[in-house]
Picture 1: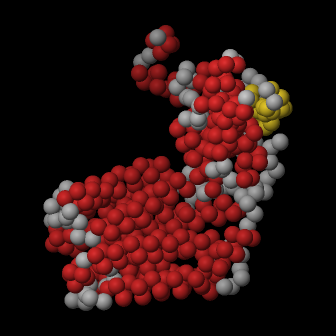
Picture 2: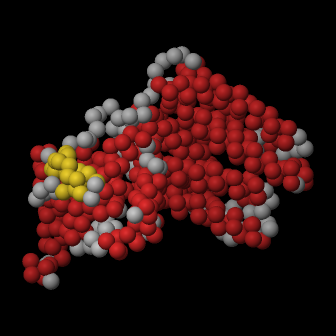
Picture 3: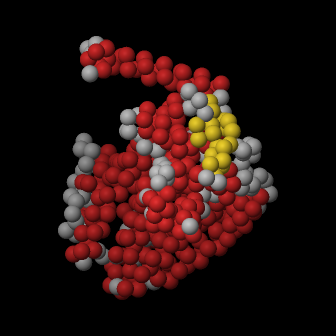
Length: 357
Length: 107
């Protein structure tokens, strides 16, 4: 009957995805219910089942979904997992804010051009950036507007709608990337794929943190953040480009690094103040720094691969500039990372309420 | 209240049940439309227990494994009754708008 333990062991292995406090309370129950669902009462058949069968894919997916909700905790979760949940929710909103600001940029350009069309004629930069693209340039404007909808929906608490629309928003970019990859027309494959994976896909996956137990986002600050970002970041970048100072503007990964570094530096006084409650934002910044740093490192591959691209985009010193951006980011995040780690160590990983049984 | 939570509370309305007993009962109540996976079931049970709508009833050993039975709390019974009333009222409105009689709706 040694094989009789196999199905049980396989299921227990899947359950290791769940946090320890949850397994302590529910694991034996879950195993009993799981095995009950397989057993027929026929000893021979059950013996074969125990030896050879495995948890179904749907069963594993249900456990993964449960694990995501528990680790990215909401109301009632242990404080450590609640902090992780809040940090991931904050980081996801911050990345979506960048997308929404790009959409706002397109929308404002429509009004500035005096056009009454929601989708204006494509600017030359988009046309040259997507040669032979699978989508007409107008699609990128629409995608930008869709990101605004996603961002506002999440801030207002419409999580399900936000998730569905967000998935639709990343499809055109994926199709464009795949087509470019297959035809060899991608000018900067490393940076383009890194953008899609880290800036498009990762926040969509992080939307798993916006579950039923997740507390609502602070509406006013996050809604104000959109026009504030536009005025403080998008407008100066646009002004630099229009006044012939394009070389002063970092490329997209560089801009991400600098923005996260500035946020880290702005948070340092609070992180070092010793006050309680600063750790979640420190953790959020560490997550954002990881995303921005990875994006910067991967995208440097394009400049190493194609020296012509360096000249075309920014000038010959971009690799040195990119490394400097990484250094600034690393120093800035090092100033807040200890606060994030300290807060995590201080927060309990067990729920405050008494457990069943 | 989600559909899954509604079905789980309904499964416990006529007495305590253990995990797999709830899965079977929910499948029967929903005429096979709701097939709860174990991970989903315990996600629902955890939420309902945290909300004070269900509580442990007893444990029974079978085949060397303990099975924990759950029962509705008073709050759970009240929440289920309110949800059932809400759903019934909605169903009455739908029937009226579709012009269905009781027999047509059943058929």
